[in-house]
Length: 337
Image: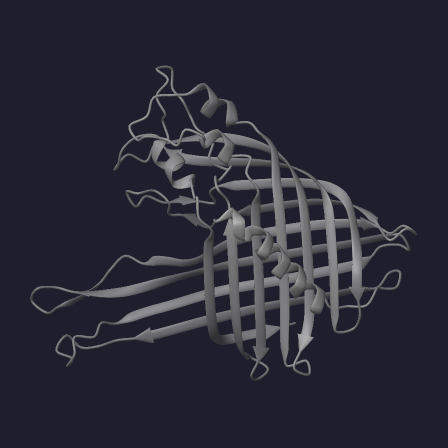
């Protein structure tokens, strides 16, 4: 990421958050609100091997679930839980030299497990203390270059505490932000031997960081479109694997001289979701996510007795000097309850 563009990016994000904002007025004591959405998206095509034009069949599918529950436990304490699950695959045919069509191994197109529980204590100043715990993982980790997969990897747990403020809270829109300190524990397995061996090793990394989270929701176009936006700015303060990079090790590939500094560089994660219901069960959803994470701190370097880096491929894959962008647009079946 060009660091000179960072102020412009943050200014744009702030402007977008200011002109729009998590819908819902403050709850009364004992009251709660919840929503859940389950969606299935699918695209399928099939051709005979003598089809004019050489087209090939494919099957693309994804299943997503998003749920949120909020309850005003007392006059001073609000409790909110959110859960997001997603998984999908692409199945593609390949044409052989004799014209025959065979199905290739499926590729993953989306994968996410995200849970957060947030407790907020209301005070007169409007700057409400909060505590939060979260968990994230992948259903299948396919980052191995040899094509081997690991289920539920990595596993990341996060605890944070600080102050939050509800800036806007109306029936159709809301804007909130929170500022605090967090502790993250990431446990990641990796293959310690070349394929086809399935022998794995595990490393756990610990990160302390300062966090700023801004969340916004708004109903647009006469409630026909819903917009949700979340901007997370995370500044790692310490990381348990940094000393390994500073002390040095032996590796086949040449590592950046300042790789240790990558681990405590500023991280940004900006998500936006626009959704519209065509009918009660058919919906259109546009999702974008931009992530700047110079080094994935869930990947802790593992060094053997001979000072050789054991998980070199994973470390190289964890270096991402440029921002990462994801965009999905889907028309499918969904149901809110």
